[in-house]
Length: 640
Image (tube, rainbow, N blue to C red; front, side):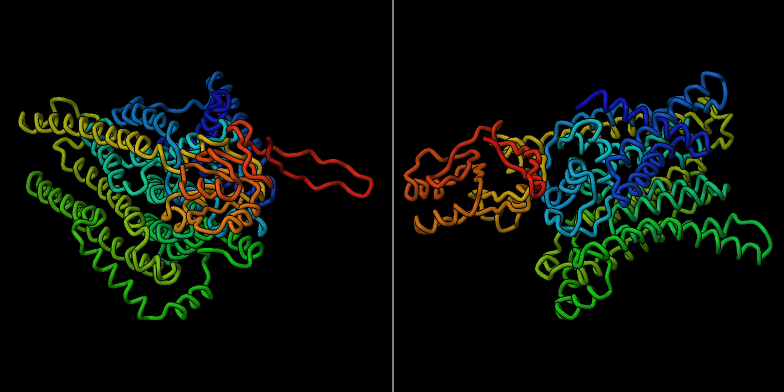
């Protein structure tokens, strides 16, 4: 990692954070808001084909803002209020740094990193532009680029690698996670803050399908949604901040992934409820103010996504997973109602499966809130809205389940839909969202249930009895221990996954060749002894990412004649053998009388394969050579 670049990135981020706090943004929401503001600025530059300039301008603006805030602070003007360090601050800092260190040393393994999420970051980083119709290496062209843009900004300053990409996304996740503490009534109460810390750690249990060592956005969507909801509550009495905050988060969410629409609907409903509750004036005035504020805010937030949809339709004739009524109608006509009903039946069975992790999460949330409501109602004799909140949470579950069925029925091929491909991963998003919503409502109910309601009077003596004091202290200590243990479990689990996956294809490629960073169309044959990796296109997608070409083809079956073998091999320029393949080695002996071809990176010649060392197997661009007639196009050649 380039430490100077990391310092520049941090200084720029602090510049945005300090400026937003000066403008009235909550210190707990300022970090994630600053990141989303940068993403939206980078998005505008990318859409105008000025991404490289945009990275430096956005970073430079952050440094300028930092300088201005530093000078004003030195002069004693506009100093920001510092609330001090709380228990959750120390938890976030210590375990956040530990997790970031683990991620920095983690490789990318998950299939979808190489089918899209890592590939788009690599494309943006080294091409400096959004993909076009001719860039076949990008398959999911309708996916918006929000997280990719932020990660691109980070790796452009700190050096491109698997680890730096993971750290970049973790910074976004951790900043959004910090926002939940803005919902606390009294942040000095360790029991309440540690309940949220423990819940954050528990969410990673339900994120086990992908963990944090991946660039997928299934965790990003719910954590950004929670930050948005907390902000609406915090700014409920400040119409200007409320509108700006909501518009920024709606825009950011919609630019993360198309499926963020569901989460945006939740934000829009809560915004409408807040406006109805806190807007002042006569009935006519209130109706007018609520209508234009709600429609204006949501409409403004949707504009960047509408720009993206227009860009997709103008740039690509066909785009995977784009929002299109025509595509949905065609899917219905192709699959038929019988197949769709089979998928629905399979989903209902999965929802009733108690061994399903997502079902266990739903049950956990319901039981916890029911028990908490009973204890507070009986023990403190105070009313809470936990039961109402539980009903809302269950409605969210049901609605999300219905939208997930719509995705399987309308957007996914039947072969993938019938096996519920990615079901647990998708359901984990709503489990995480509802866990955090439930936890926030729980800690607020717990705070209301305390004996002393005056914050300034709370100390070690303001307990109803010695029993309640001891119970509070013991509960706090237990939560502290378990919140640390749960987070360390995630860290150790990531380390174990890294060791367990050390012989997977992405890691094997690193032993035979250096990664290519120049976009090219070189034909490469990937010799893979595992038919499953070839049939699922995993090996091919990894090769596309690693060698930065869409003409990498994985093959497992080489049972053919020597003549057919020679003819097939001559179609490629290079051959990559990450793992020993017995049949391929034997065929090399029969077809070319060449022995010792086991693993490595090779150049294809008329007489066989020429081994290249990892340092030599590196793609470098050839400079343009002018001629009398016209300039030669830019070519990319691999050295030896």
